[in-house]
Length: 260
Image 1 (cartoon, rainbow, N blue to C red):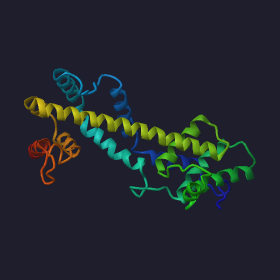
Image 2: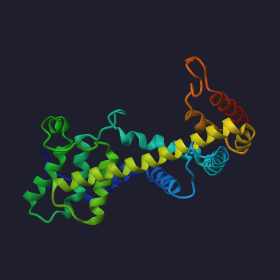
Image 3: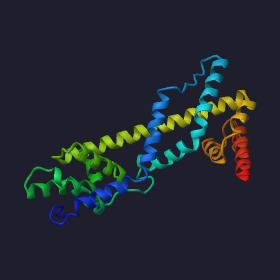
Image 4: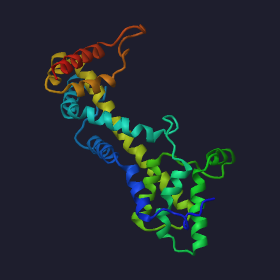
């Protein structure tokens, strides 16, 4: 056990660690939030039950508005995806790092030193090896994300509201933070899927308009769109075939990168 009050780092050191953990994620979160707002604002759904004219009109509107941001949103998805599944990416906050971050809550605990120490140590135990496995096996507690950003967000939330009295509050704050990140990621993913669908409709039904839309975008945007297209899209059962749109995007990307 670590005595997190007697040998804790300074409050400034813990705050610096929290901010360093969150550094670099402000922009992806902002972009993802904008995706959410756009999906609930002026971007139009592509409903295949629409008339051919209306479906194409929606697709053109969407592509015109969204294509310039394609690379930014793809970068956002890449940044947020590891937070969604840290185990898949081999990212897991260590017990030692959690111990360094948790003392930031010390000033919020209205208790005697011994009680404060016990509370912080119980929070640290959430990050000890094997605790998730025990919780899952027994069903006695819910697993929380071990991505450093989730803990940093939870700590920052508790510091902002200036309330902290139990391990359950930290666990709830972490679950809330994970839920928020999942919501942001889902919005960015839905935004990108809608752009890809709109791009596909335009490619199928107005090839000249599709090429015109790419005439003034960068190679970075063409690369982002290419990365979002499955190579076997519309290729039928031929596993070796590539989709016509993938081939066209690849050609555009190579030309633009060469020009850049």
